Length: 67
Image (cartoon, rainbow, N blue to C red; front, side, top):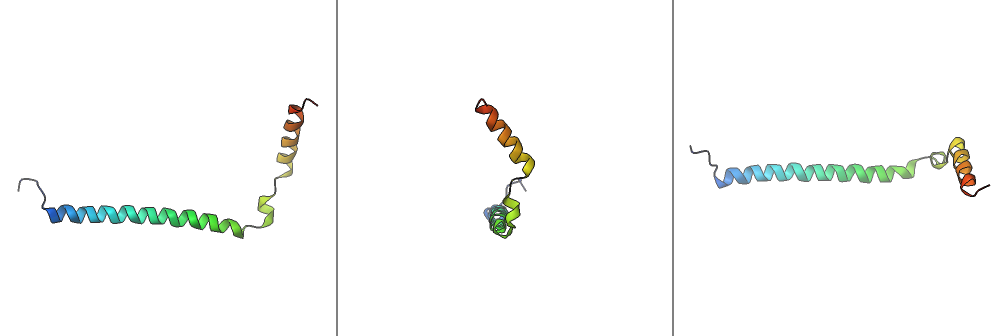
């Protein structure tokens, strides 16, 4: 053996690598879609800004206006 592989051995490895890569892309796509869809199931309170943050933002905006 001279270390060279036959064409069918290379093809077999190429198919395995392609299937693993394609499977990874599909898995990541599934996770991204699932995350976006699950946002719809959050309660309305998840979208409310906490009072302390709102107060801080108001304070910063008032300083920017020169009071």
